[in-house]
Image (tube, rainbow, N blue to C red; front, side):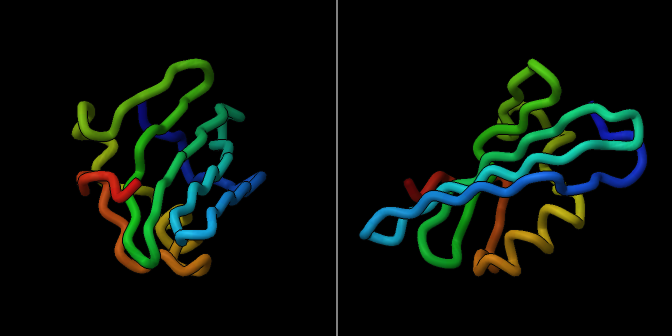
Length: 94
């Protein structure tokens, strides 16, 4: 399911352990007020999108080719956090 129009970030949560592994949850809404939540795991500057939740449906980017390209707002946000190498198809570093 693709977002209608541009996504707007409404919340960002981040968790990190002492070894540098981290998780980031980015909550967004589209122009129809549908909620999209992106869960990203990372080790240092390398990350992977592990789930995308649309409303109540949890989607696996590895199983859904339409999720292989992230919206620019998500890519820019995680780059700002320090994850410069974000690949939806990458093997999870965590």
